[in-house]
Length: 204
Image (tube, rainbow, N blue to C red):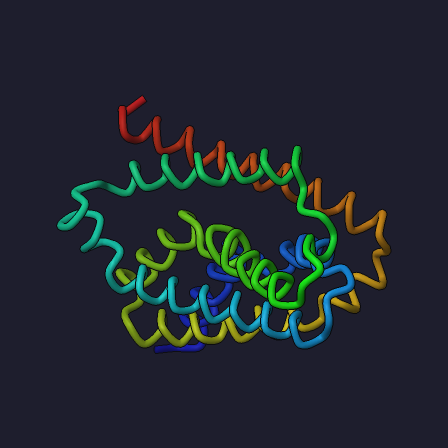
């Protein structure tokens, strides 16, 4: 394992996971949540993402070909459709800033649910990142792929911890605008996966 190979794998994962791009979405949602709830949200997002990404990287090819008998293109189509639907949902019906409930356990439950879906899956760990992980494992092997995965999710955790400061810097209007724009791009990425999967599957 050379430094150049490891850096290539790390940068590929950084580009596809795009943790910086998720900050405005998190910033809009956390609102007036207390520090403990925010901290738990960030931890759960990163831990869920890391576990899911590791499992799918190690077993994804086998699961798709042997268990579910699907290929990469079918996975791209489904993942692209999921991202597109999520983007439309959060553009047209955005989550309210902060909690929707008044009881503390309801607030915490909703926040942690948001941390898992959609933040960890499918925004961090979506069809693009899973396919990237599978390809990196095939190209570079276990040591490079798994160590770069651990490093990128550590960086994600650090970036997410800075979300409250980004939130203050952007202001309420800035958070809303940037978040909506990012959801539009996420929807476009979903359409791209969908179209690419259809083209490759049917040989168009």
